[in-house]
Length: 333
Ligand SMILES: Nc1nnc(-c2c[nH]c3ncc(-c4c[nH]c5ccccc45)cc23)o1
Image 1: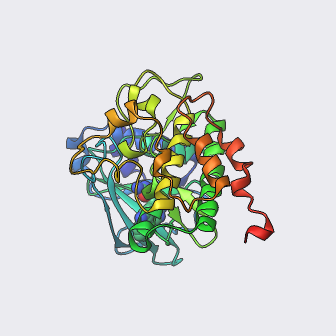
Image 2 (image 1 turned 120 degrees about the horizontal axis):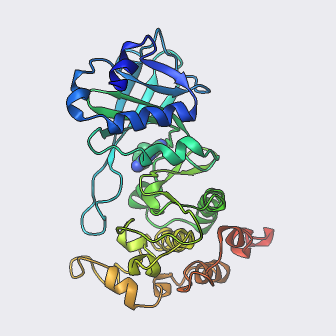
């Protein structure tokens, strides 16, 4: 009933604070889809610092905001993709009055969970895609976020192949600043990989917080397997408890992907022959063999520290940010 009252009051779509937005998404998530059917109009909360314009409580698709399919659709990519990942179509959105361009992620209301937006609503950092608002209409939750118009690192790798070391250094610094911030709040992203790093003109940001958790103490014991297999750490695969260091390992495998153009393991264990990599990750030493010959000694040392099999020995985000590999001296350039 409180959802219906939310619609009937004048501010169907209203400006609010992060806690207003979280109240809204929790209400949506707790409302049976049958009563959602009665809701005829859009409703939701835009975070008040956004320069999206709401005219008398309306923010309608094709009138107040236009959506353009961004040629990318987040569907489970097959065996390497544990279906637990939050999925949804990401569109380019443009506010018709301010011309502001945003990313808009559409999640069917039956698949939507408040965890999809909790972290982005409560925590802000320049290397985390900013959340501008959450609206619901036509049984679909629309999440308006900061847009990485350069696409994701995965799209860049798929279209241009392996990246140059100076590009990898730049992306790694951005991601590590975001991880340093999340980890300082005991937050584990759980799905660090090329497709969840998007590029902008002056920075890169982390996206897709659907698997994110905030630890109550210094270990998180999972109920299910979270993430994408190729980038998973051995301790995560073991499911006996892990911590933020699992994200550091996933960044290490992401750097191998950027250096070589392929994820770790797949060249030595082809996907056709190996439907799952969980056993390989558990049994084999970390994939240092997948580091290409061309990798600089400093970057190789960084990878050895990021891929250490023992989480307690593995470097933290702050330690990696101070590695020589991320501070190439002038003569190296
Ligand atoms: N899964 C997910 N959850 N939130 C996002 C997201 C927030 N802002 C964004 N900006 C750009 C892209 C994006 C990814 N691949 C692309 C290829 C071409 C153009 C754009 C992109 C995705 C996002 O993505």
